[in-house]
Image 1 (cartoon, rainbow, N blue to C red):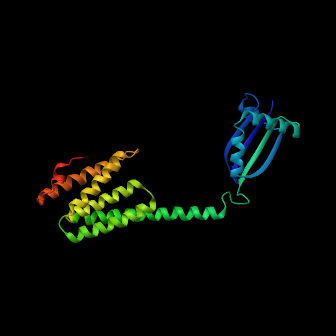
Image 2: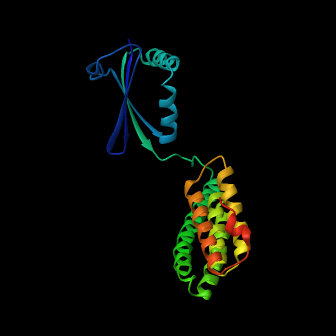
Image 3: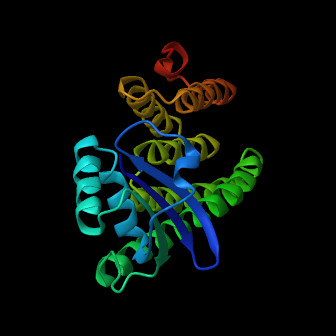
Length: 226
């Protein structure tokens, strides 16, 4: 019978223990090792090694190797995790990933800012035309950010924000086309976004209400229902 106890630690602090044996064992059988080995290894190599030990054939080969080299059966291997000599990721790839992550954070922050600002102007757009115009410009900026982020559902919501601004500016026909297109997109997509569908229905209801208030003769707006 062979037993190997791996004591994994960072300098000054133990973090894990792994026990390997060629048969069932009691935990106290590892308390009196015949051979103690101190090994410094980087975290990536350590994880690969421990993952390999999940295969029973690898375990048997490893134990045979240990017994053949030291002629003993019980081992304690102190694995101390250290910084790798070379980065696991190449520096160019790491810098590209860092720039991409930073850009994504900045775009998310900008989108949140525009959403708050656009909502404020949109709330005033029903009574003040200038605010409706500004809300539409903010929606256009949000759409550009959504294109950068590559999120089709976010892009669709931005187009709905534009439609809301168009309704406030009494451009009902253009708003109608936008809302219908986004509703078809929301219903035909394999991934159903219930919030997007609800937005379409809500803006469509506003479109019908505002167009009826202004007594437009566009029968399509009043008769078509989603």
